[in-house]
Length: 525
Image 1 (cartoon, one colour):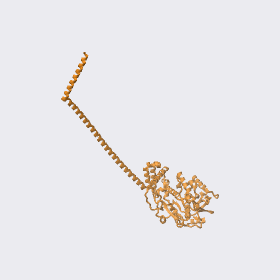
Image 2: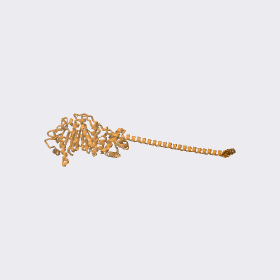
Image 3: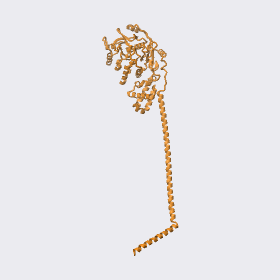
Image 4: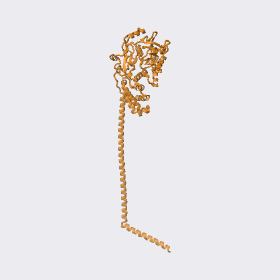
């Protein structure tokens, strides 16, 4: 209940336990076993922030928060509680509500481009290993570098096919890409589609400013995510909330300490957010929780036990409400001891015992004071909500949705030139280019083959002509030689030759005889 510029949450005989508006962005924690009143506490806080002009976001995992849009009704039990708490100013009221639904059935369509979700958060949705997340991150980087926007699951599937077919080209630049990892991611995307998550990815993407609205009376809108079906897919639920947390941190401007938060964000079933979270990602969340308060955002985590929340996160939560914890086993007793140890002790009672003895609607409460210090823990009764507890019928819900100024803004799908189209175009262009290159190569090979055949033909013809020329030359030489022999034979057989030869022989004989006679005469003188 918003009273005296404070968020009045609970009362006891001596004190009113209120969150100071200027300390509301120091974050908070609501814990307790099932059925102890955590949802009532959340609802009371959400209504009060709305009255203070602070918009709220919360997830309705059981379907019983939709009644916030309708005025509460007095019952005997509620009337007695109000009298016991002595709250004369209490009035039942309805609150400005906007319904959202990832599955687009019970609220405005809540969409985001799969590129904006990012590889880290999408890996949580898909349940990927660190190695597979690395391959997915490479695909995102390739899409960014090659200006291929990916809006929905189909875009990402086409991108994975493209990267898988060109992994050798990308490995040296981006790192190792295996077909096995690509296959795991594709199978995980199919499973995500089976959960209906394909409706979540696409355009128009959520404008966070639509979460930050107030109505004409200055009341902050209570943005209720219908999460009954979504909660059946815990990884998807947790990853979506983590995505919103990242968006708030990255997109909201720095504003420092304000008189009141710009928005308060409730994380129901917060244990799912941190389940099996690797150390590097937990470190990122701790950093966000530490710094997001300077952007005017208050974060409130709701879970069964404080041990569901990592100690590094618990240390950042200044406003705490602890409902009953049932403790029978050693691990449960340990959880109670840890919960008690997180409070500034009150000498009037044993905190550990008080936690185990709290009744439904009762809680131990410690909020920050003006100095930013935790107050001494107090045992108190939580105020009743001013709006209706429970769900709405479909007719009433649809009336609120259709009368919202956001009606139609997110319902109509925007179709843009997406990665699937760009990738397919690129693939077709590459295939056409490859085919053209192959045809050109075939034509070039055929041309070379024909040129080689022609060259071989010309070589053989030249060789034939050379041999023919050699043959003719040899025949001519033989014919000339024969002609010479025949001419010589004819000359030798001619009468002049014979007479000349005979005369020559006689002259030779006469000369030889004359010479020999001279020789003999000289010998016998």
